[in-house]
Image 1 (cartoon, rainbow, N blue to C red):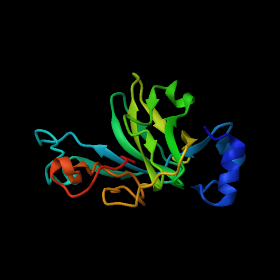
Image 2: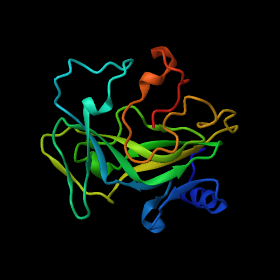
Image 3: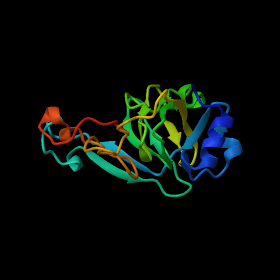
Length: 201
């Protein structure tokens, strides 16, 4: 079952579903979703001299990404073909009996801006800010202003609460993240790391 606005408000009032800061519930809570705003931090992929990124290596993230923080009243320009990691302003806490899906707002989609490449799922038990995988599929640069509602979360109730919610085991490598986080896939078991698979939020 997908939660309606009334369901979302009930769960938030009960305290087991958290979306904060929710400064304007009347604006941010939609009929069956919650709008999330764009944060100020971005990770931009460099044009670099390294031949490629090896997920299973000990490469420093700083070798291929650079961090940008947009000051108040400034904008981040997303150029055609760009791929950057952004973050939501809000942090969330998802209870064990819900799963959330990150979607872009249709108004940004009509500007050719997408908010996730593959990481559209927020697992039961996750808490923290959400990393957005921002791309411009269009032909013109688009100005992104922090605090703008750019994405939305849709909540689905599970038939049973997850027995091993995110954060309960090793492998919850993005739990309690703040700001955009680069990939930590090198820690996965299939790459020789010691972490079991977890959501890529």
